[in-house]
Image (cartoon, rainbow, N blue to C red; front, side, top):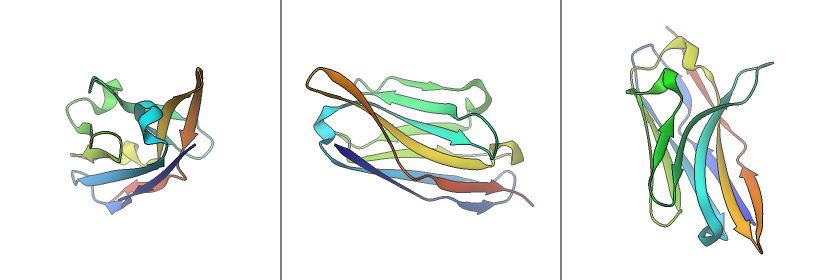
Amino acid sequence: QVQLGESGGGLVQPGGSLRLSCAASGDIFSIYVMAWYRQVPGGQRELVASITSDDNTAYVESVKGRFTISRDNPWNMMYLQMNNLKPEDTAVYLCNAGAIFQGAVHSYWGQGTQVTVSS
């Protein structure tokens, strides 16, 4: 089992910055990938950024050059540095971890943290 908890959300003006954190606990050595998703009310959950155990990263096109995903080894903490925020970045941001137990893949989610970009 893996437990995840996000922090760092809030209200920021357009052009501002926020740093989201995701704390992982439990069987963190089973994690092989972590990611940030975001979701707006009534909308689909969108993959924003991911990072693998090899530190390979990927981003959705709309955040490239503005957001940076990183982690502490092994998987204690994951971060999302968000710069030059835009109103369309407003959403609940959720932390996700993929882990392997006994040959099966499991997906874990945090509760989410609200990010609001508004003047």
